Image (tube, rainbow over all chains, first blue to last red; front, side):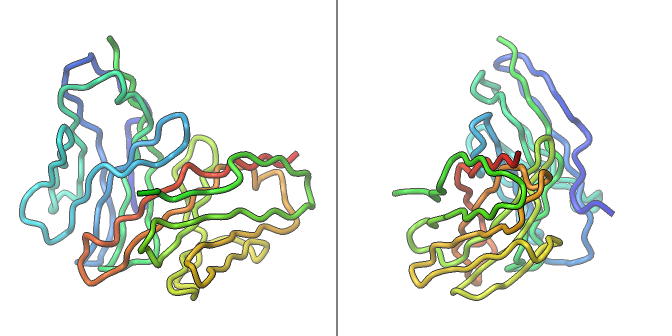
Length: 115
Length: 116
């Protein structure tokens, strides 16, 4: 089974609107971390936001927030007030265990912001 | 502060050749991980090194090897290159600690390898 599933290959959003990128995960480890990364065409993976499995509140970082629904095993990324510079690939990733030695990545979602 | 740096940025090799990719972690980070990202897919884990020891290995053949130096920089070696090895190779560093939040992996810009 896939550890991370991203079901939206491509998404479009109007500038200044909010957009939600979906991510579901699969693990039996009670301790895990969930991450979102942005990858522009240049290739560098840019860390956006982190959510720990024991965190009580949803993580927020500026215009990014993570809608964490543990029972449904989902960790959706919400980008508010979209900007043209948000156009990129977005990857959801998971680390199993407190200091797991690898990240599992999804296949990514390509986001295009329309002026 | 400098981020994760990788060299070279681009590389073209022919089948059967060997290649060495280099990575310098963020200052203070002792863990380095390598990932392969084939076009259109997410990164796949190859290796993790911590304090110069291999801590994890993904599902890659023995043609792939790596090492970490005393200054925590790392090299990834790939022998007997195949066409399918063409990919973006990403290096990530992290400061592994007792807190979950310290295991965020920060990535470099990658080395784009083309095998002809």
